[in-house]
Image (cartoon, rainbow over all chains, first blue to last red; front, side, top):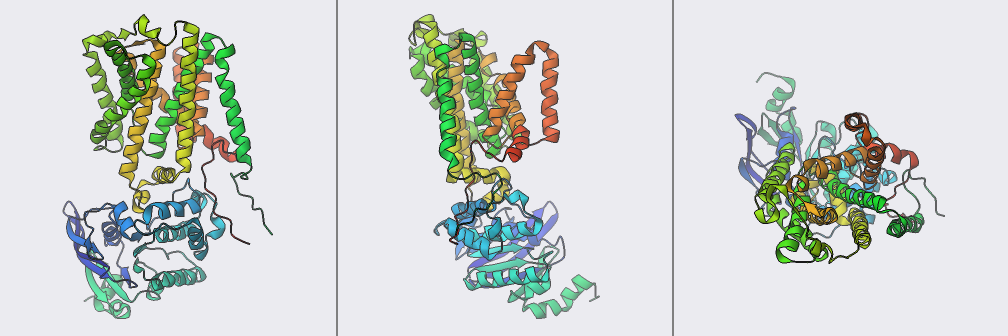
Length: 238
Length: 339
């Protein structure tokens, strides 16, 4: 397995935000994660990306234990991420935002050249905004910048946190195309998303998180149709 | 066919030589000051340039690396005291002791950082202040350096610089000018470098920077130690000009940190132009209104509050978008596409 998170747990006091969650993806896999708001999905990403330290569990990347590594070191090792609420560097241009990620995030892989950064921007429809300060971008552009920045670090595993919300059908289609393309290049994708049809167009496995615990994982259609999931989302009594 | 796209806030590349020529002309004009200006205005300019350099350094720490220190007086005092110790106790010529003072301040900054970096946010700010107080109290205990009442630089040592006061003032002026230009030049170069890119990312969003592979802690430590070293050098220079040092003055939080913060905040934090404008404004205000006594202080305070409430980016953030010009541009343009 490329990325293997085993028995991850994070508590704040008595509150278990993530409770014994294990997930694994191989190169080129695409795993979708759904769950109600506050279920601990973003915290799970923070644990994998290293922004938050887990209380329990281990994370392995290509067999190497990275649990003790900082977020920066994990990024260099190959874990790229996008933030649910976009965090662009507003004082830098869109192009410079990618340069930072390329220069610092690539680790042992060769850093992307400026032209590669521009190619990513073009691919995500941000090319014409390259020299604009990122602070001037609108929300949807910021979301795409999150994805672009994640890609510029040359990730082996890419964590996407709700990047499809608020898109028009056409924009959503092009986003799906872009993510499929990334996947084809051998990048493993873990995608948290509420826009289920977008998710289903890309992922081949679906995991459901509720109250911090993983309650189901498997074929997207089957998992989504399962009684447990219907219960969580629609309140159908068990 | 090449298309010219209007890019806000960006000038064509060809402007760069013109800009450098203008900056060089300003530096040359400044360098000629001792040849024609009075001793008084020369000393005022030395003070001004010292503050420009201190403000640039504080801005590098707070504006870019996110290190809000209110304890930079620790390194001003340390630099000053190192110079006086070396001169008085070991007979080292003061001009030679200047770089040593900077070096010592940088070395001491290392363990200091290990303590201070355990704190974050407001605790870091207060921690640096407390550390500076510890240094002040420490130097007040040293009898050989005059204890709490301070000590003067012996005339014999002063004369090793030059027997003539005018020449001495000129030498100190030129050293200060060189230091000030070097600080601005190095920070400008740094901001255009790879590390500057990382620092700008830390400035705008530290969590995102860390997640994109910027090792924020190491970068911050480097900035802290380097700023301490240069601040120590400036401190030594300040007290070489004053010829007298005491713990109260050397480790004054008001003189070496609060005023500097005022300048950076008023001028515009997170840019090179901002601190420069802030220093100019402060000196103009001080020369015009300081005889208003406490009303002058009330005015300065009101100006700070107004800036923080209505123009958090300082004066430069109001000016820059209107004129679409950067004196010290740092932005990297995207490579041109073949069309």
